[in-house]
Length: 167
Image (cartoon, rainbow, N blue to C red):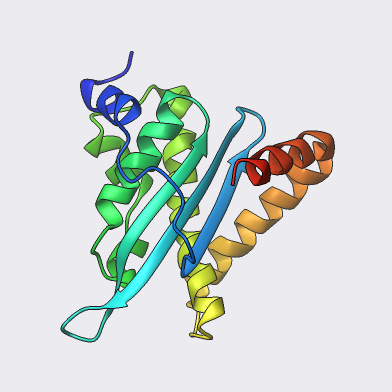
């Protein structure tokens, strides 16, 4: 059912944890399956004066695929420029992991969304211009989150309390 690479990232996730004072934080979730991802980035400049993702960590509450995709996207994004990181796709994650069950493809979408939200948060904090594509992606994520939080408000409050108590 799961490829050896998926199981490796699930059993030994890379870059797991929370960054102190992250430059950007992305939080996404899917209440239907119960997966929630937090992705934290620290940004620095490379020798070409481009912003790169210098450090990246994640915390994920979810299934095997959710944890594996979270781990894998941190490997893909680390030390990439922001521009390169924004080009990471769900297909790149799925293919890099050797495939996911079709019912678990949404986990790769969540991982991409978490990364884009962390970058969006960084841009907001540093007052940088935001591309139309990133803005549209952010608005879609916010709309989805608002719909879910309204429909499942009791559950999302408990989930936030659980996360904040583990800090």
